Image (cartoon, rainbow, N blue to C red; front, side):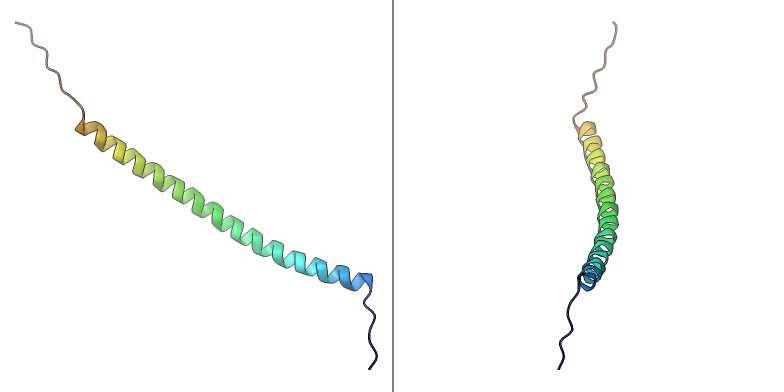
Length: 68
């Protein structure tokens, strides 16, 4: 059996192929994570708003001033 010599071009093409594959996966996950993060942030803001709004109504004191 004759062994083929591995050339620099062979190594570079394999590394470039591997890097492109990994970079593609990272880009896909990145966009998904950004979307999930934005949606999660909006949901948290809405929850905090409604909880604060309800709490403000519970502690509001009504003061009535009458002139005699």
